[in-house]
Image (tube, rainbow, N blue to C red; front, side):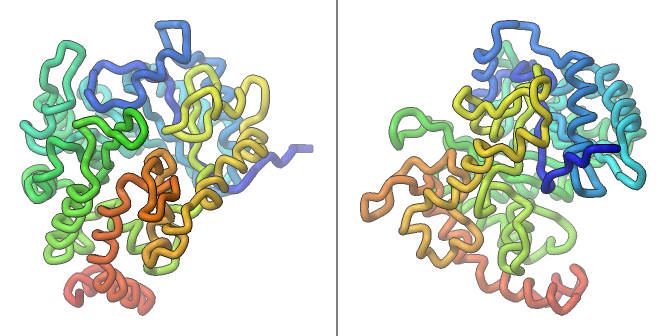
Length: 388
């Protein structure tokens, strides 16, 4: 008899090389996580890879399973590692199950051989690129402090040439926050990218202070508004911006598809190279270590009381100011890692980006209502573009 260990659908970000990276991006929040491990040569063993693959498939109750490879820099593992990973996926795949793979990379090691492999196995690649050269190179440098833009563009062109599906992952920070159209049009017009993620950089120092690299709340709101207006006028149904898609889902009464906007946390965990499982990518610390897959099955870790409490804390610790907010239905207080400000009445737990989000969500309310109604009517994206 086979034991059914499946739990509700969850997502696991895998760090096969831990925090190891061949870049030194100045705003990187994960590089310091190397201090959690005494071994400088951080690499996932074949034993952990095989066990993770087996347990992850066993733990899923859905017919489509995505393996998400991140870092640090996951390409440091080399192609043979991913060839073994594909082999184990096929070994443990259940009948009727479809398996997908995603790879988030800085692109530095991408060459023709990588592209051939990624295309053959239908990988979705998330490529980190912060805009045109001057804006990208402001903080994304290599270990010697040298710029990386040209190498990333070379990787993008190779991936496109080999027909590998690519999403652009863009961090919004002090260097590019005042250039929304320059960034967006660069991706859309010069690169021809159709899928874009906009990720705010918030680096906390002490108390409510942030680094000078951090995006300001108001600048982030204006960035989103400016890009949204351009997108609404020209690109609905042709360019897909993750924040806009997630927002539309909220207006349509659907799950956001973006954990930061969900009412609770806990369904997006992290697996480190040694089998350690942490509650979240932004909470990789001993206090949030859920367990190790070599000692306890992944499904039991995901369904543990510790992880449940971590997840509902996002909802239960929401300040009253947020609970009565008219855009709570889409924001839900955003990510707990950014909740270090005080509300106007002095309650703790307000999100640092609150003012920017409120401005943005109020700005898009009318077109989102229109698009939501059209979607419920079954209208196609091309029709919607002509009607909003």
